[in-house]
Length: 260
Image (tube, rainbow, N blue to C red; front, side, top):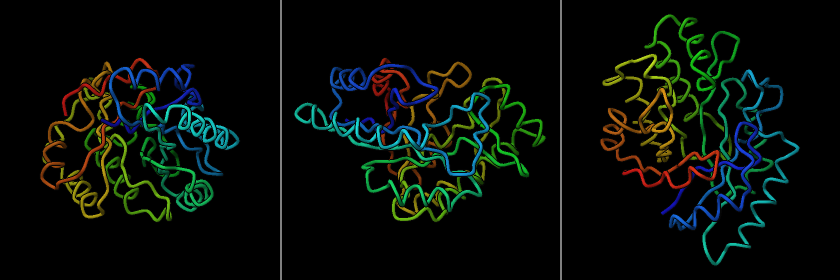
């Protein structure tokens, strides 16, 4: 059993739990393999739109992060397989800069995820998942909840098609992150044509999906990020999924027990 999406004490919007706490919890609950996938540094020239400016680790921290995980790999090699990984943000318009970072550091990564947390509206970027207030701001700018979903899915289509080089992640993170606040901003996304186009594209590319259970434990979400209509599409197009707890605290490691 593998958990392919775990954050670390390097995460600026996570906890101070030590690496060892994550690893020991993973061993305790019976995992065979884990991937630490810390938020990859944002591309050069891009200004973090998160109100707290805390979306990712800084570039100057990256080597230290990689070294720390490599030390853990050796220390725990008899008990559990540990992968050095990253969660890479796709930022529309910064493909060359993302590729440059991956070209430089991608050979150090054994596992990785490509995620969309930010969308571009005209010349500004907005965080999809920072808060319900920020989500409402996006909704007001676009005019309808359907327009929000469609722009999010369009951005994911661009991410899947983007040329990010040899080390581009081949697993897409929390595909329905747009539903993080669905209890406050409900939308029936069944039969959404853009979503089916997206899942079909992922299947054709041979990419995987992050079976991200974190949404189930978000107050305004209450569902796994692959569920409902999306789950039907994943089965229809035979897309492989990899469990991801998306843990930002060691106490969430055991969320892998959610039925797949």
